[in-house]
Length: 230
Image 1 (cartoon, rainbow, N blue to C red):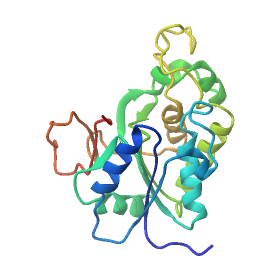
Image 2 (spheres, rainbow, N blue to C red; image 1 turned 60 degrees about the horizontal axis):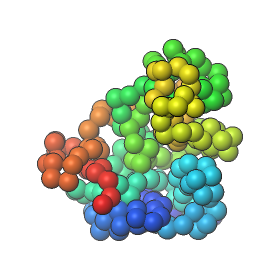
Image 3 (cartoon, rainbow, N blue to C red; image 1 turned 135 degrees about the vertical axis):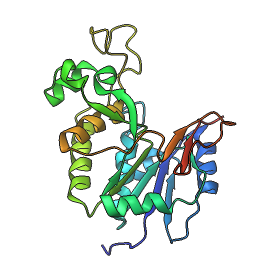
Image 4 (cartoon, one colour; image 1 turned 135 degrees about the horizontal axis):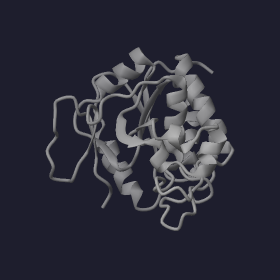
């Protein structure tokens, strides 16, 4: 398939989140040409339902974009929208091979025992691994070997069921270790893989800001805000 020369923004949203997808769609502005691929059902990209394999649809979204010939791919969640021109994000993806932003959390807090066993690491080791923030803002340049390696390992872990787990650990279903507060599915798995590959995160609030609806943008580098869907 012929490579597409323009970057693409991808998103899948269902139910109430479709409103967020529409907000995201309206917000996207760039000086350079780009495309969008938005879906409203997992079946459109051959993904399992969210309840069967949480957030697996994100990886199927990347695969769909790759199969269409796109190389520079930016996944943005429906809870996120642009507050300015998105060209700078595309530039980072092109120049550095990927874009991820630090979350300020540790993988050991949000990985269940099964996840740690899969990767062959202890919880003590996982408590030293930084997480990237919001797997709902992730850009990959599929011309870059490190992005290819990341997506391949992420996909294998997803197919192995390592995204699965409870959001909270109040009932100790995810671990008897009280340091585990729950399992963060695609995000914690991706963070462990990124750490293994030596990938570096952008500073928290450098590109994406978590914010209440009326909270102003904190600095000039912010391109996206995440504030949920109402």
